Structure formats: C-alpha cells, structure tokens
Image 1 (cartoon, rainbow, N blue to C red):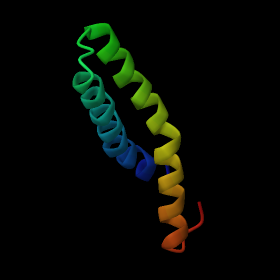
Image 2: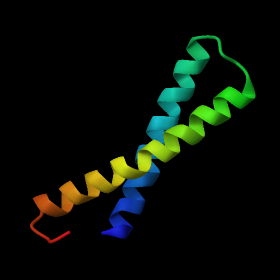
Image 3: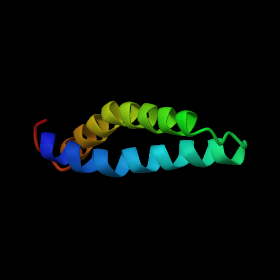
Length: 65
C-alpha cells in the first residue's frame, strides 16, 4: 500500500500546493517566504490525505490494507 500512497501523494501534494499558492497570489501576498511556507505546509497536509485515499482504494478493490 505504501507504493500506491506514494503515487497518490505526488498528485495530492501538487494539487494542494497549487491551490494554496494560487490563493496567496490572488490575495496579493507576494513574499517568497510566505509562498514557500504555504507550499511546504500543503505538502505536509497531503501526507495523511494520500494515505487515507490509498486505504480507500485498497478497500474498494477488495485487498487488505
């Protein structure tokens, strides 16, 4: 399941970071440190989300997690 979670993490982290950075840019928060911090925070938040999604995928295809 770790491999599936890692693949899903790449997708989820990219989406989360993109959403957060786009939100910051739309609010005119253009400091590089803020953008980098937000992207790192989004990448950290994406870890448990990817794990939960991988768990659900395995549950839905009938394999044990």
